[in-house]
Image (cartoon, rainbow, N blue to C red):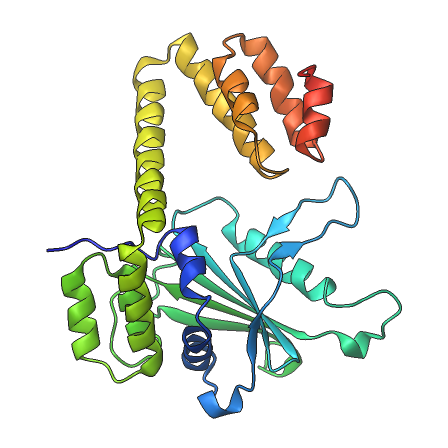
Length: 294
């Protein structure tokens, strides 16, 4: 049973949506829009710029402009995280506000749609495709500018939703699963996506990224198990160093020499100081200066 590159990783997920036909059909199925009504579904910049240096930087998975009058953000979140709902609202609000240029009137604000694909159960309800909008208690819409979709990959499918085949695709791990999906569908978007996954699985560079991602997950799990089991000082130091690197990754790409220097540090007080600096750092260079790393 041949393994394929899973779509549950950020690099493969983003690679898939480079294909315009995949984007068009996915949006059509999730939003319930006829394909012929979609004039354009153009990829746009995934950075959400900060207005103030203390603001949190946002980086979205896949951002599209739909028919020139709506923005769509497709987010993949496989592991459960604290305050996920607030994080989703943060990204939605940033995307909504960033759509207005200085001096423009409010009528220029585009509709913003967030499609969240989750690898965990958000709640105990059986529905696996939920749609949230702004409305009052009687169901009267306040505005059509906000729409949030939640697609849960781990719930039992009932075959009644248009996104069922997309869920099966995102969950596929083997060639056999792709073959079964291909044999049972007439959806042009799914068929095109299956081709992309097969090509992706053959590409040497993507295969290397896939294996590196798996190794990173295994290593992280091993480190966490070690810290929990041993509780030794070096384990605690390594955990703090990893926390410093995680914070810095939000400020930019961490150079290899800086990563090695942080991971080599064993002094807990130094690591605690670096944690505070990293939490407030606007970029990598400011962290280096404040931490005394020249």
